[in-house]
Length: 169
Image (cartoon, rainbow, N blue to C red; front, side, top):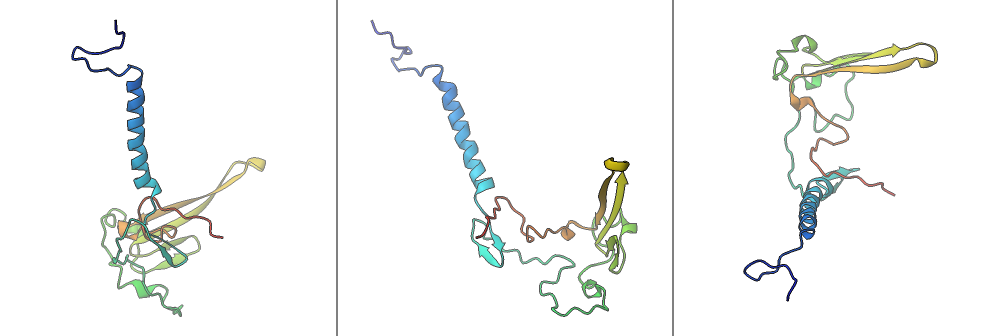
C-alpha cells in the first residue's frame, strides 16, 4: 500500500506547509525587485561637477524662474536683484492670489526675511521656558507663488529616486 498523498488523477500534491513558504518567497522576490529598481539603482546625479551615469538619461532644459543659468561673476551690488525681474512675472502663479500680501514687485532682503515676486521667506526666533529649561528655536514662514520656485541645493534641481552619494576618499 502506497502512503504518499495524491489526488484522484495520480498527481503528487505539495505538502500543506510548503505552500505558505513558496508564497512568502514569491512575494519577497517581487518586493526586492521593486526595491532595487525604485530605491537602490542610482539615477543621474552629479558630484563636484562630474556626472555619474545611471538609468535616468533625461536632461532637463527647463530653467527655473529667478535662476540665471550663467550667473554674472561680477554682480552689481546696486541692482539688488533687479536683474531677475524680467524672468519673474508679478501676479502669476496659482498661490499668488491667495497670498498676494506676502509677495513684493521687487526683491527685498531684510535681516530676517526675503520677499520677491515669487517667494516670501520670514524667519522668527522664539524662546520657551526658563533657566536651564530655556529652549530657543526658529520658525520659518515660506510662501511660493508657484511650485516652479521650489528648489533644493542638495538635489541640484534633479528630482528622482535612488540617488546615492558615497564618501569620496
